Image 1: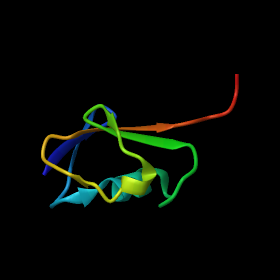
Image 2: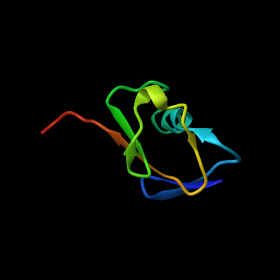
Image 3: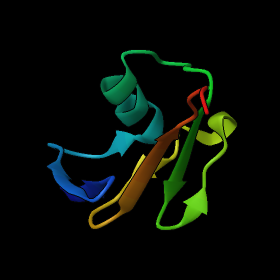
Image 4: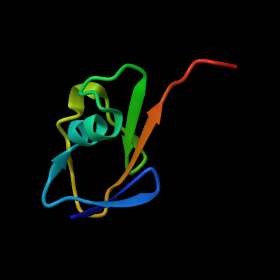
Amino acid sequence: MEYTLNGEPRSSDGPIAVGAVVEAETGNASPKGVAVAVNGDVVPASNWSYKVTEGDELDILVAVQGG
């Protein structure tokens, strides 16, 4: 299955949950300050069990401190 993460093509052998993608990218299953959008729609952390499907576009945004 092919999908896009932050503009980069990715692939998976089968369906993958948003939470699994977040954990793979951040190294943490429940990171603080992380927002996820799938095809432009925000997916709340309570729904990270949502399965990514063929052609989905994911964006993971991480809040950082500083000025």
